[in-house]
Amino acid sequence: MKPKSVKRRSQSETSGTLLAGVWLLFLGLALVQVLLTFRGLRSEAGMDHAQLARQVARGEGWVTQCVRPQALNQVVKQGSGLTEKGIRDTALPPLPTVVLAGLFSGLKPYFDFAPETGAAVYVMDRVVAGVGLMCWLATLFFIHGVARRLLDEKVALAVLLALGLSQSFWDLAVSGSPRVFLMMEVSLAARLMTALLIRREEERSVWGCVVGLGLVAMAMAMTMWLGVILALVMMVAMLWVVPHGAKLLPMVAAPMGVFLVGWAWRSHEITGDLLGAGKPAAQAFLNAGRQGNIERGWADGLSTPSLTLVVRAFTYYGTQQFQQIYGWLGAVLAAPLFFLALMHRFRRPAVKGMLRMTLLLVVAVALICATLGGLRSGEEEHQLWVVVAPLMVVFGTAFLALLWSRLSFSNARSWWASWGYVWVAVGVSALPLITGLPQSVRSGLLARGDLAQWPPFWASRVGSLNRVLNEREVMMADAPAFAAWYTDRVALWLPMKRTDWPPMREVVKAADLKMAGVLVTPVSARVDYVGDVFTGSYAEWPDVVLRGPLIAFDREMKTWPDFPYTVPIPLAAATTGEGEGMALLMVFYTDRFREIRPPAPKKEAEPVDAGDGVTEG
Image (cartoon, rainbow, N blue to C red; front, side, top):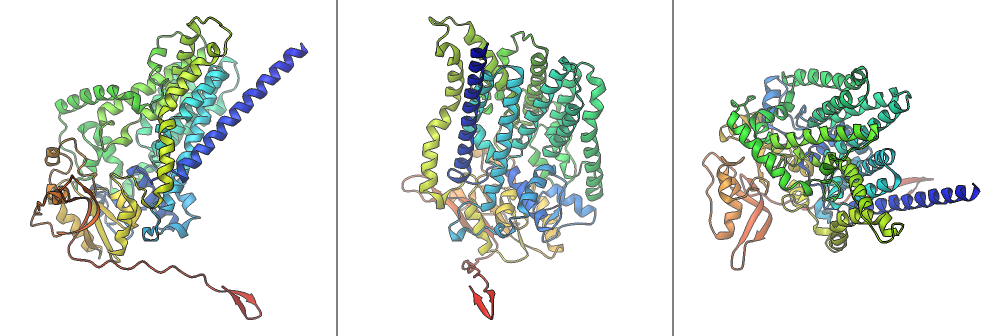
């Protein structure tokens, strides 16, 4: 018996050493992503949470600089209105903002973004990206625990490597998107549900798991409003897969219910509506349109939904998502194999229960994406496939291991027969990272002064507007979260209709503020065909959207008489071909010629009294 014990201990030590090496590799990749290849935030939702967190950290309260027309109309009706700091926010779920505000409170000296000093990447962007990376590493930890408890160490290692070497997930982690928070919470919920099912099998107490699931469900609702749907699906799964789950359900649902009731009361106090500025998130399900289009409407209402339009959009986007599903699942080979794993009859009750829970989450995500158009440009935050992809990888890898075990090899005890499926699953999934990371590192080292998420965002260029604008001046923008985050001033979203422009300007004037102009980025021109500009989200603003690009062809698109901001300040341009001019892809239109102020001088350190009348610099 002694030799077997020594052998078992040796295998355990080898497994632990290998696992430690894998985690060191992931930590190294995290540092590379945030220090060498990082180009700034890409998620507008992430920028929105970040600018609100900066306001909270300053002590300004829950006041947002990213002003949505519908939200502005709501607070004006309630008598609070707009100030130089912004408006009270009810649109964003609080959890990402609270987490970021806690970190920002100790980093106030870095709030000012001064691109003229050569800093192409905002320091606070790296802080936000660092939080996303910690959430991603926590997701890997939880998912590895799920695979290890349900299956075995080898499959768990394959799952860990396949996910951890997927470039798509690293890109999501540093984008600033709140989806990385939601992905971590879904993974933690899966880990707790796994423990609950196993404890039920062993007839042990499950109350700790139940309390944990209740807190996680509340966190999901506090992260994204779509997280409420996933939390409800998780509760339905509990009724389906957990013996006597109905008795446990109240403890899981209670924390989320308390939060939603409290938030609805707060929203009603601020806006007069229980849903507050988050109302468009619910209205989007009935309109078959973009949530942003509803938020950009000045009137607090919704046109009568067309059933034909809803069905047509549902069918179209429901089909489109499955044509692109491999990429939206992080390009991990094992993820789409989840659908084949549904055909296998797993024997262990806990495995069957988790498979059913994952199936319910997948169905919910498919319905959300089909209803909201989560795969089209401009609505990436509705794309929740990445949130459930780690769970799908667990069962897809298990199915791949089963298939591999059915293959006949000349030497059944060979290393390839035992570990081959791991190399296949990991190798294919890691190809984008292996081929792209060296070039990304090289670009990060050679072009550090010119890094940007371009198109559509160029942080250092829009940050330079502070050398042009004066105090108490605000702007309108087609990407208000981007403008507010990098200029640290109020940015109002360009409304859907031109008739909404005058009342918004009156609100700005009543607040003793001045509208400086309009920032136009490639966001408003992000269409499949040029003609779509006249029928899309910015159909009433073609003179603003197309004027910059048409300059390349020596064509001047006259602005409408009611638009006073005719003087362009170019921020980013690109050539359209040999012999052609420069197309202005990011422009700030203002009402007059403005002088660019020189960079503010660096503050010298104050002398420190060293005693006996002697000072040290």
